[in-house]
Length: 280
Image (cartoon, rainbow, N blue to C red; front, side, top):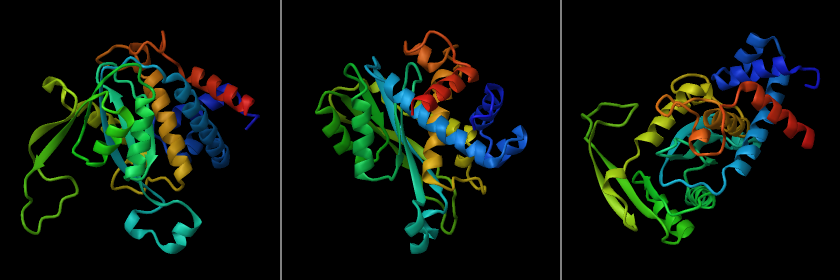
């Protein structure tokens, strides 16, 4: 790893950011798989650490939260006792939050779709905010108790519940049934009805699926280790927040949120990774 110059490291990071698999990155750069994996792990840790420190005292006003499904090593129904004894496998839900105005993703959590995960995720979000916000989620009941505990009533919170039609008898669907409409339900405070919506976080979920190979559905591209899955998510959000210009905003989310004054280049991320490696 120490023999890789900054140019080669930037090539690897670029491939990973563009959604290439580990093996594809190795083939494209001519670097061994073990070296690519080592850099991916260091990159994930460095990106998670940097964003954890940077995403503080945020002056957001309208937040949307959601969860996106993936799996690690094997789908939940195929996880045997022998597999679970060796490693974490099965469903891997990524909880995400997005600022509806700046499109900044201040926090995320990879884990189960459980009350504990909902609590940890929402508490993390609440701890990064500097003021009262309006929060919108889907109809997942786990959010209600988590939001109440994390914000202690100091939030304008509503749920947007989608109403789906009944599929035809015998028909199997991969995607949900047709959405017939939505109902908004105020849970806490006085949320503005005009801003009770979740399209930005749902679009963000689609961007994740398009940008990370391991999130692609109906393929053999999936994470083999939970830790590597987490590192890939951290690297993705680093580039999304700091290095990717949003088409509507004409700047990166970090710039729109006042966290940065310029767009980060891949070389900047490589330098940040190197500084993290040197200090750990």
